[in-house]
Image: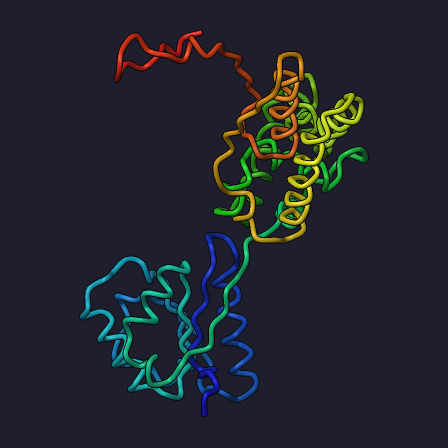
Length: 316
């Protein structure tokens, strides 16, 4: 009928969203249900797909969709799918690569494959992965350091667009950075006898290391915002933006926070434009939308060149 082919699955998602893990689980499930035969799942790339599949192989996970774009490769994939209709083939790649494969392989026009799109992880989920990896490595978090601290360290190190692009890979990197920071912080004589305990300095969250906790920054900025007299448009704007940030943090589409961050503030003299600009910069940084905590003020005349086509000096 019109139902999708469960033996052929297209999985799309950004880097680190678990595409291969999902593919392996799908193959195991189909084999356990008796949908496919064979006791072995193998992995290959699109350009290395062969026309002869061993009898003990029941499922094939195909990666590297973006590497070859020649028509011959797609024709070979089409032939493999036709010759082995009882095998399970799971193709994994980015959304654009999966779409290109879907449109270029004739077999998919005859039998529509099943499709699975994996979303990016929320920062809280990546922090949970980092906590598990630290535990597996034998490290524990100090009593005053929890998964919220790991999330704050994640957001203070990478902007949200990078987090959405690298996902679970950042969990491993975050754990490795914390361990390396601890080893560099403690003198060699204390490393052997010290418990494998990670503190806020190891995560780069203490004030002595130049970074305050993002949670503390948010509370400070929010208190300053609420203490301002008037400024209703600014408060309404930040309330709407905060709702988007919280939605993405709970697993919503990170593309909601993509786009231009340039802002034009207008108002009469003394209306608080400069105050609002300074507060905006701190607010964006505290909510992880700015990677660097740097705020520079310029007079409009300082941004003009001496003639058409001339760029102003960027020196301080």
